[in-house]
Image 1 (cartoon, one colour):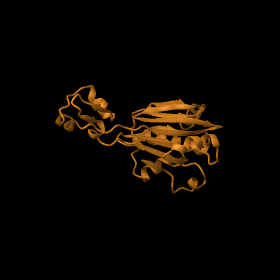
Image 2: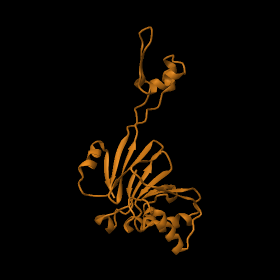
Image 3: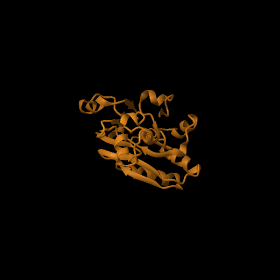
Image 4: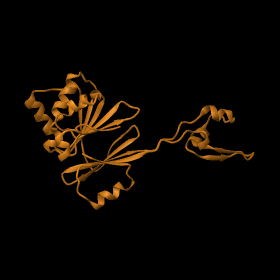
Length: 224
């Protein structure tokens, strides 16, 4: 599920909005950009703020981090104890340390800071996030791999198939020919595959030939 947290804000019509991606089947949400008032928009859209596990900051401009200290403080007030992962460009830790110092704030949970670089930065629950650096900011590519359908054990047993390695091959859609000429088609014994997708999160509106080559197979293109 995808949300623009500050969709109704004036700042969205200009530039820089916060984008939230909620992963299905797992209680895990990722936040791209952390604009001012982002914690209010969490509550305004009835989203569970404690399910936030990752914050991705594309650059260190004030518009991208203006809501961060408020969000971190709100998480602290809710009694959060699970770790939070922040992915940001080099130098972010200095901003965070100064923010904690001048606000005289400490957090009850652990914050892990990951320095962004070109390439794969997150590989979790079947989702892969790639970072692509362009001048002073980063853009991102999210890829969800195709998932094989559920194997029907009852249907397999009704066809006199014994449990074993053959089950895994049939689940992948392989077809077997038995000595008596019977054809076992894996697609007949599994539900439909869950198709994957590819989402590009673009920070800049300017056309760039090299980057748009990556967008050819996109399911969505999001701007933030």
